[in-house]
Image (tube, rainbow, N blue to C red; front, side, top):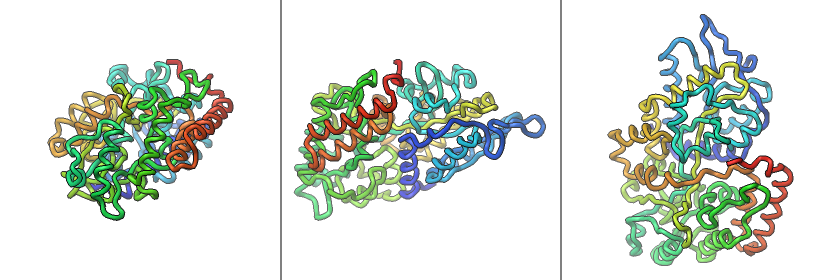
Length: 455
């Protein structure tokens, strides 16, 4: 099944829109077209509604098949599958929640703490077995639990900050193409060597370069440079007025000032045509980009290096990678929560073989959240032809950090500061001062200290 540029870009754009919290309009539950959670059916069969976004063809096929196989596996629960166009997801979910007709089970990439605080999702501990919940790996805990209670079951993790490079272009410049630059100093040294070898219209690197993309993709880099994120642990104050955040912003200004990156994007951060068309030697994107290269630019597969994003010189082992995710949740007021839990557990928390086709057909660009599934996927015949799989799963994913759980407006204030410093419209001090004020407004407006995680 081909994964095209268009379908991947649409999918990730929808994911980003949801992450900023658009789902949190209203709490609701139940099934479309009827009373919330009204799952009565013929002959005592419980009917539950399952909604998922339209993603790539491979993913859509897997969703349709897993529902079909669950319905065949037993005769007590019938799952009705609804595939929602990505660009209509937010509107459709808001309307369903407001009307009390939300699906019993649905896919989510929203901030879990926000969903829990809004009372939108059902706890899973009473409807999913302890064994199934216990299989969730530690690096997925923050997207599945709040204060020790499970509210979501992850389908996958997906590194959002991965460095790709064209080995031919690096070799031509005398730059080591066997591994990723370890630090920003190494990256800048490589760009200095690569730049003289490039033709007009070619650049050393294509990174994030706008406020919105900086906001969600650089969470790992913020942690890498400063050792913390943009709020104090108690969420009472901004925490970006420090050398770490200043240094991170200044690195991007060097890329901009020296012409190592284009002044106008050659492609979206989530897309890879600039890399596929050999317009850049390095590309920063999510792990999903390898599926696009394999589908749209297969000749580049053997010439594409994949590695972790460079570190600050004093990172001391801290990651620079933000981890995206995708989970399944049960609606808070579903009258069929027990049946919903059984469907969720059978589909993504049960037999690992149920999940192998998903990870194989998406070309090993996503990370399973259970060790048994990772082992089953690695043992597949197709895995031998995807050397990037082990790099993503074993080298990048284990220490990547989840996206920030505080409100999106905090992220956006940081992203805006990063863009303004990079483009020279504000000094680091002025940009941080402006961001501090914006973040403090969010803290006061939303009463964040009362919503801070307890652990």
